[in-house]
Length: 511
Image 1 (tube, rainbow, N blue to C red):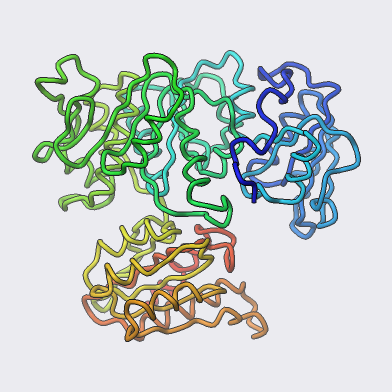
Image 2 (cartoon, one colour; image 1 turned 120 degrees about the horizontal axis):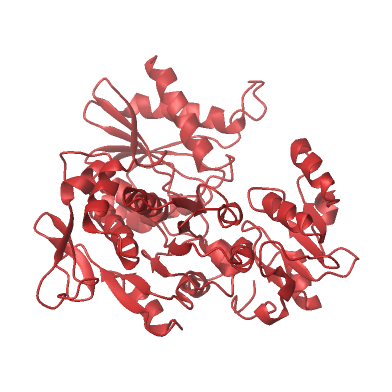
């Protein structure tokens, strides 16, 4: 792993200047694109359309990508699949590598690019450079948790104000496609640390880091490197750097950021706000940052019930982390002049995304909740805090996380644990250190591999986990899928994991 992810790769000065603008010719440039996935494919199409000599490499030579291949052949893209093509650079001299966010910085091919002096960028850098005369405002969102909810809340607020807006980036439309869509006025952009790692030039109109907790340490190599990549979202922010008053790391990021002159630091808090902050007074979300009279009064934006509606719990008190998400979205919207009425209407119109604290069924007094999106300890902590008596389905790719605090903080809520995932060592260590008497049912990772059952491995594992949880759960319990770990060890992604859980629950209940 590189020691300094900000400087160990060639800098922006080495990136071909011809990339700037959506239609300038790239004739004569040879560009390598890594991966044929959600980001690699549109990048290859765009670069090929502009005349670049594009090579795409992908280690997977089994998946059916025939439709993509047919499209790329129109632009004479050279597609090379298989492990031998991703171990090092092609023999041909390269001008640029455009990498997909799933490729770690210490991948042999990317390290070879650094050694050869070939610049490496990701989709964010590419999208920023090709936007050309597109003057849509960029409102950028990152953080360990809450990114997707905040981004969709923001999109809903923008739409309520009559703006032509789109959620994109790490959700929705790929950023490369959104930036080329005519007529858009605002982009609500969710960015992961993987995406931010490979960008150098982004200058968002406003940006926020919602929160920071250890995550993806296997990818970044250290907590410091992870934080450094997240902090890049504030680089050259034009109007506002929005931070979490309750998370000192995000404030430090803003203080250290090199921003455009005049950009303001704006905080959000679930408490009473000070001047320069958004917060809560009684049951109202209020603004003391974007109004002239901020030192003497506050502007009402929305009610706590609006947040409850937005997060799927109308008539109930929304969780603090959801209030924080709403405030962060409101701050971004306010930074470009969205009025309070649109903030309120946007929250009322918002629908919570799939696999985020969704009650999929209730039967025999047991509630079944899908929070497959809880892929790290910070998100799982919020899930566990929401229920009193839990049969917890957890496990997966740990990403270097320590799960001890989840058991020490919520051991009194967790009646039993159904443990999935290929590697359970980190969970076992945490249990032994904090709740050694916890009832644990282990779903063997090899289940279904050689069983002759004509189903995917993950489907068999989830079905077994649901049956195990049903055997333990009593009336009044919540069976909670909040894995606290990534899905890629046994599933395509967290969506697949959540969908299989929902199917298994309905099959169990006969609904």
